[in-house]
Length: 202
Ligand code: TMP
Image: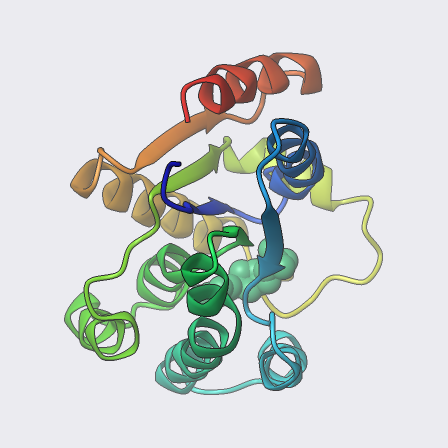
């Protein structure tokens, strides 16, 4: 039996990753794989409380980074590691790459500080596979335009998202063995085709 895998979904707001999460999870379940779907920030009662604060209250960028990793520490301890140990695959809607992209790229928190938090919170653990939904920022913003209740991150300007996108791509270039870049501006059907190829090779 193959070891339980830890898979993460990443991308700028409006890239459409959430649309594909349910389908991806269902496809794995149809193959008889036991899958747990979770998200960050969140995934635990404390993590969900921190999520409400992080998405709606103004704070210093380093406070934001530390709270993201604090929620992650709890998430790993209570949800992710116990599931993997029991043989359950874990799919997380965002994980540490989002901290490098948003707090690092977007807010300008030094990468060295984020790497310290990463080491502290997760040691050497990294996802087995990260699907990065990459999309031109203009397209992502058009998709968000129909949403009337934008959170603190979604309200940021295009330049912020350009930096987030670049930081994601840099992170993918640094760890190409675990990243798959999905061209998310394509039609739903075409994105699904890209995902089907990935699922078939997991
Ligand atoms: P979501 O809308 O995909 O659920 O994510 C919530 C927001 O939190 C999203 O705008 C990205 C942001 N975020 C960070 O800034 N840093 C992080 O480490 C994580 C996990 C999310």
